Image 1 (spheres, helix red, strand yellow):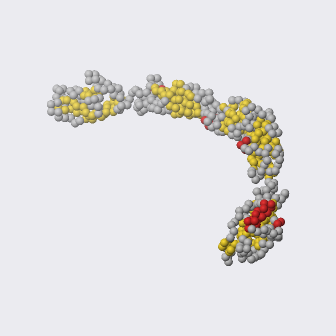
Image 2 (image 1 turned 180 degrees about the vertical axis):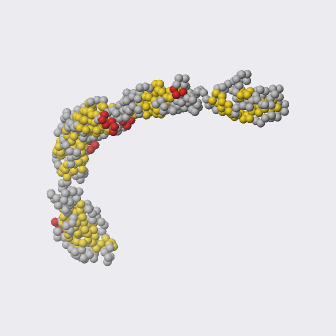
Image 3 (image 1 turned 90 degrees about the horizontal axis):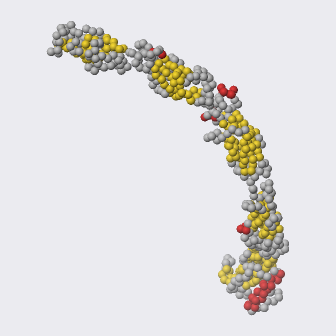
Length: 586
């Protein structure tokens, strides 16, 4: 018989020849004659444990490790060697492996990384470390771990029992040193001599807080910008450096004083935190050649607990010089509007144009006409005085509008000219007589009675008086007493032709001529005489012409009185009649 529970120290190892045995199995029926054999079964039988089948001695044939397997359940039995019959019931026993300190503490997740704000107080927790020991925590001190710091003092410390790493030095400044490496040891056996130890590394980074104010890298900035720079142009960049990083270094710039605060603007470049100064209003060197700006740079994210370290602002002075740019001449008006009568004499001065050099140099200006604006060369401009004059006669009816482009250029090399427009209206003078538009030929029906209107005539005049056209109509002096037809001025620029009698017969006389005078209402009065041709025609009872025996004559709308009398005389000769003095004009 044997003990039901067997305790063995781990790493126990003996061979079959070893005099030290784990246990001996012995049957009361064993006479020592070799007729009995012993059999061992169960966990580890044959691999970890073996039995001497003759003596019943049990031996460990493999090193034991409690951390691999802490106990084994075995079964033993005595059998007849010849018949293999059990001589006794099978017995079970447990082998428990007793712990020894054969495992050092381990940090499973190392190396570690941790952050803690700069300027943290002493005792501020950074990170908690935990080391594990595979030995039996219920047996002795093999698994009782104590922590200590090997490297990282005096900046950090570790709690021996909890493994919490804490700040141990006040006012650590990230801007001075940002990264620290701390080595922590975990030792078992309560830290006693002979205990096993393991180490790990903690990389600690100080995180930034806003503990530094911005500072401009210059107390005075000198910049320049051409006066021609458009609004929005970049003048220059300034920079307020901040030792902090991230949002703690973000900056806002503003112009807080100076004579240029309304002329320039400033913004923050979000990429590099530069202050970008730009043009806000148009510049003019001649009016103001320089400006002074007082600029402030201020942090936008402040830590309430650090306001006592402030102010978190800085100021600098920016001097901006405006550079003179050679500007083209300036006309004293954007355009010149001129009116000139068409009968103006050649050499008449139309307009005196004037331009000046706006630059401080005030160079002399010379003038010229852009030839494409006056291709027929009606005008000339005096090169130094700017007097624009006519060099050809004008005719409003031919060209009533001239758009002259005058060029002004400084009398220096490589100067760019500037242009100005001079629209010129040619004013009308009454130099054209009116004339009839049409209806120089008309007809009268044989049955037409006295006082009937046979036609209404109108006139045109190429002149354009300011008050509009006003025509008057009358019979030519030689036709005032015409017994056949008369004229009525309608006072609306038209005239009506009326019959003075009835009883018309194309067989008696088929054609009549009536000279009329058309006059305009301007000074001096212009007039012309037009000869109307009137045919006598047969008409139906509704007044529609059936036939006229004479062919129409085409005559000019306006004709002189002498030419008219000559035409009438020729007509009478052709007709074989000699007109009397009283009816020379029918």
